[in-house]
Image (cartoon, rainbow, N blue to C red; front, side):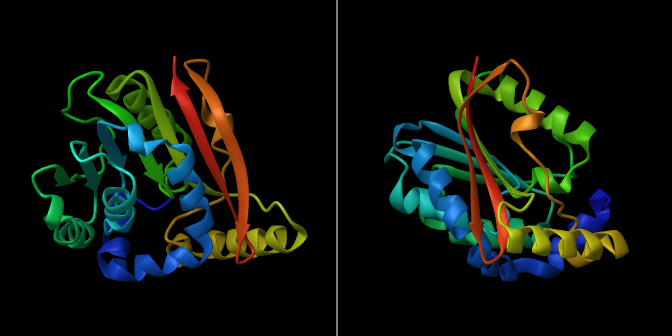
Length: 215
């Protein structure tokens, strides 16, 4: 795994290049937008907001006029770009710089959507568990957990691409930004009711999208 400082350094350099990931993430993010029912959201929390591209899309296409948003990221450069992109909604959008912690200062049950895309695949199993604990704390009863991640290939070509990805990562995690294929649904315990679990393959890479209700 990349350490927090290594991940911070990588994504500080990555910056706006993150937007290019839409070539293999785009379809999965569209599914997440549609299935997450963001049109009904009053408060959204995003862990690992990156350069703010998804948050901007939600404000433009999905979120009600009164909805508020909080995003956090470990990269100073990403936070700076995200704040710039969301300045139009600055009265409702807050972007925070973190030091890599998964616990947040927000009160219990203060959000009805917890969003994290292509971040869990950067974390250790222990950190994933801690993040899901925090998501459960932050969500209101019945709130939605909305996750997307790189996962194991769903087609022969995607499996080959995944094998090559894993080889590159084993040689140097920095080559893949620390990401690895995981199965999100397998990380959820009985505190969650999975409403949707979909695999979407784009550009020979497979993503998993999971929408789950807090019980």
